[in-house]
Image 1 (cartoon, rainbow, N blue to C red):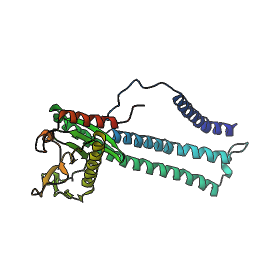
Image 2: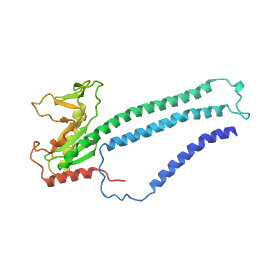
Image 3: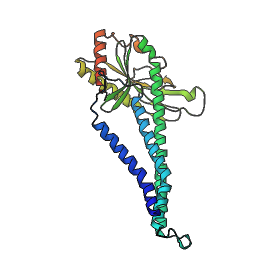
Length: 297
């Protein structure tokens, strides 16, 4: 009877959860009802990051549950291996290889769960920082929409997404947003990043991949729009570093990628980027962008 109780205490909850998940998936598979939404849903700022955060939350919850169950499960398994009809004879119990194996497996499960929790928590933190940066840039783009600009967020591409797209007065801006932590020190020097057209010089490190990424995305978007509407569309790559003061150390040349903190975004609606786009063309560009978003389930 004791053996049966221990087995059922472990098996019943696991089987109940498994059957519930299978039943839920079966119901969803045969649910033929359709969404009432007929228009495509455009993403909000940071939607892809928000989905990644949710995945890491799920992984953390799973690992936490496994870590909490590792002890009771291994203890139950160990007791089952020691039980006989008379129960466990503690007076004659001796620690052997089999007992060490149960303990080792238990600690292995616990250690793996802790590593998974910490790993996902670290990745989740980076995604949260990126999400906050994208939300900040989206907030700074509000004056652009007030002046007639058209803004899209989290635009899907074949290789990820473009954080923000702005159809300005004369050109289209493809905005890549990056979140970079400032050093512990305070002052203007700690908040300044120097840009020479090729690389970004932060107080404690230098990087260039973000610039290359912004340039690639703008080139891809230009090809996509040109193919979608049947005529060339100029796309300006822009790298947004919210919270930083960007110092241009080489103003004698025009950089292929703009870098700014986007705190003052009204420059996107100025005429300094060329002849203003005709309104029908701007609407065709907006339509081509809207069509790229997936249909709601």
